Amino acid sequence: MVDWELDAKGLVCPLPVLKARKAMKQLEIGERLRIEATDPGSVQDMDSFCASQGHKLIESGEHDGVFTFVVQKAEKPG
Image (tube, rainbow, N blue to C red):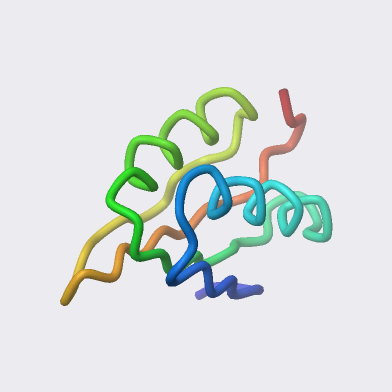
């Protein structure tokens, strides 16, 4: 289950993560954001983003060139 969705397809680094960061500010603690991106660099970027901010990467995957991430907002962002 996700609470919000972000379409970052067609955007290149660092835009998917920047848009995810902005979207996460709108979420309540514990809510989840699904991000779809086509930039292969978003895989590493999303891992780094979650690690640096304390958010939890619940799910990640790729299908037909679209990378999908589900991120849960941290209790205390870093």
